Length: 400
Image (tube, rainbow, N blue to C red):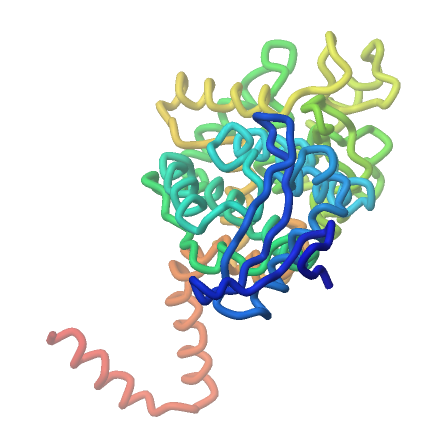
């Protein structure tokens, strides 16, 4: 334990102020010299704990390199560790890197972690209120991680994030809506009346809308994934991006549950065959992808999304739909048809049933009365309720 006179720092009692002082030397970036620093505490134990914290920091390579431990350097080190141990995928690495870069441009980004206050953290998060709630939540999570690491490693004595409140965005959360039945009919008719040589995006939209695929999953399908005899498609990978934002072929789906074998709807069968023939005849398509641009190795998901928005706006004056809405449309139709939630979960590739139930809450609510009517009819058929009582109840409701 450092004591008075130690090169590692010292602790002594100030009789005049009746305080315990922790004293140590710290590198001053401005002058390039060591500067004597003193911090006062009410008890000797608090002073010792603080000095231990400073000494722990000084042993860290980050401290040696930066003459302190900046907030963003902790986040970068943690991110690289997760990436090296395969805890996160390249696409996620890229997204988190960009959020750290944004934090680095803020007043607290390059401050040493032991000097940042709750008020500064709150001010930074409050400055993000013009972003989405999702963006704010991710920033809040990153800060929590950084200060938890600092606490665990003994770099700080108290966690300032304890008193920080995550603010709400000024923006309303975006709701991914499904096409209505009428909109889906109109769009489907428009697509199937377009020859493939006139509209190359026809089949990818049909597959998404009637099989519930994520756009990256649809773009990753090759002819080898299709079993025409049994009318099935093996979904086992997705197009994604690397840490630099370049489009790459992932070796797995978004979640482990995304790996699934889907039946091909009968009416889609000829369109699947048509797209396979195009892929087999296409030059520079060694992977035999169903949907491959002529001038690049892979199709960007944003290209599909932008094209969908363009055609829906120009042809049907629909402006609140994205490519993910086509997947949502499939899920909605499944529920409306009376399909069991667990089957919807498997078809959609949700990792658990809670995701399915939460995603389609409004759809389930809409059709719960219809399902209750089935139960009531069952009660009547099995003589579990008195028919006269039911008639009396209906009479009372009609009089209201």
